[in-house]
Image (tube, rainbow, N blue to C red; front, top):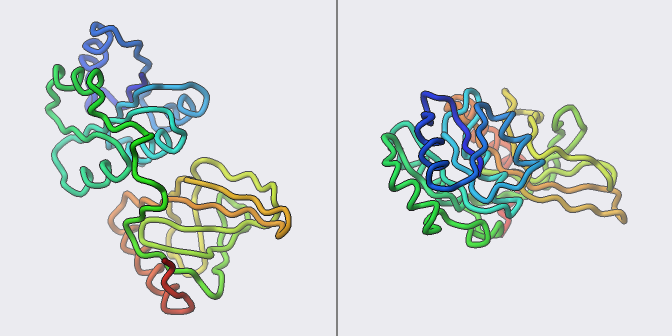
Length: 230
């Protein structure tokens, strides 16, 4: 089990309680440390705070579920309906402070945290997608790319070459986008015949201002040369 969060978000009492309940607990205080652990170790259960400095625990839940690793529980500092809905969409259980430790143990033991194999299909999308008739020049972590499909909650990009290395999480920049956004890879497909690597990623701007800019850019791209994609 991996528990992610600073003391103010997930107190040491949570670790101690779960350890006493018989679970093997590994802790991480930062998003970067947790991401490294998820990529190199298998954790049957992920418990993460929503607030992780400049990052978001929902992004870890997405990474955890995308890898088919097990259950995720996100813990918010206070109840937020939008965050709860997003957690459920990702197949994660949602709790908020103050967390009753007995309820947390029960959630882990009884499997109330939704398993990754029960999570919604990637094909079930919350937002309408728009396929762009004219690809938008972009870059992911400095790699040249093009946006071929956009939505408020995600994007599909194409990179030259069938062996392009796409990191699990990357910074996305694009023409017409005033500020970069953080994206998390959901799937990738390689076409040796076309010499292109395609990648589908979720886009979750955690800053309201950046989210507004992203949505404005999606609308502009759609109007400028896109059509709805079913």
